[in-house]
Image 1 (cartoon, rainbow, N blue to C red):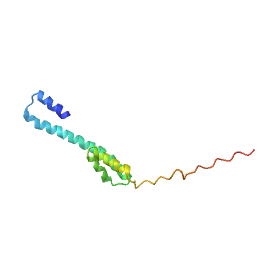
Image 2: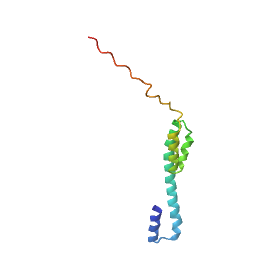
Image 3: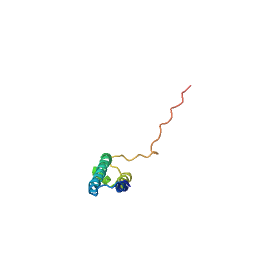
Length: 105
């Protein structure tokens, strides 16, 4: 959408065609830098979460693939057995203590 609007702007303002490759390279470079920053911002927390959950931290690199990488990572975490957590005890096995005896008069 943004590139389309940029192209319309340049078409209306008759720029020198020799400038277009430089402008296009700047736009592509800007998007590449934004993509790398967003990837790092997403990979660092998922690296630590994977490590704490008992998985290989390298699993977080699947987040380089936009959107689907994060979904795959979430499904792996949600539906696999975590190695660092203890299995939950059954709630029916726990019994509350009996109430105290009433005072004797």
